[in-house]
Image: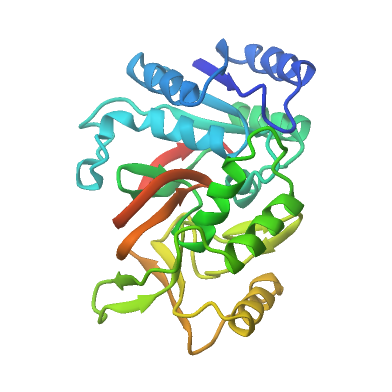
Amino acid sequence: MRAVLIVNPQATSTTPGGRDVLAHALASQVKLEVVETDYRGHAKAVARSAARDGVDLVVAHGGDGTVNEVVNGALADSEGDPRGLDHHGFGHVPMLGVVPGGSANVFARALGISPDPVEATHQLLRALEEGRSRSVGLGLADGHWFTFNSGLGWDADVVATVAKRRGKQATTALYLRAAVTNHLRPPLGRPKLTVRIPGEEPAEVRTAFVSNTDPWSYLGNRPIHLNRGCSFDGGLGLFALSGLALPTVFRHLRGALSTKGEQRGRRLLRHDDLPIIRIDAAEPVNFQVDGDLVGQRTRVEFFSVSGALTVVV
């Protein structure tokens, strides 16, 4: 088996020693090439080349941003068309392995992968020895694949704020400060968003969260549940609010952090297992996928693509 290990040396929990241990362990089972990334988009380029070269396995060692780049590189030849997603039709797609090295590691944790890089390495090696893998559905939004979440509005404003502080570690405290700041002073205002889903009348909201699994993310070690019925085996989850007054925000934040994750309210628009979601904005709003800012958009279509990827786990 041929494999490529893609390491982001700037990720929160990656170290040269940990990289060497991981590489040595993997090399005992596969024919391994190790690549360290040194610029934004490097992981995507390496994964795309690996896919085109027929590599069997690509292992991402980094945070959720690194995993997202690897996934988008591995699926680059799908041309972003969910209707053309055919592993025999558009070319080879390598299997994915993940050894977390970031601060949140949402995708890995949702798959039951340990956040500890050493334990995650052991899990990956055991899965390779036993030939274990699972099929994972992904989301596709405006040509960008996402593994766990995407969104327009408030959450994307927070991501944009954190992205401007590249020199700082993306801690829970930093995200909380950004969330409060952007709620009080939204950088692009709060333009109306119109949500369109199959079989429903269009609905106007002020912010929209799209999930590909549950939890939507983590606040430190606490999971944030927006769509408990969402999983890698089903469609997309939608959690949208038509108002962002403080009582509304606090009510739904409490629900999101509760163990049951139950959410109700007259300002809430919530659906699980959707095949497609379209959101139009009255003015440009920030748009994020997997915690990375893509840019500003006035329209985004979100597709659920079942069985898009095979993950060794």
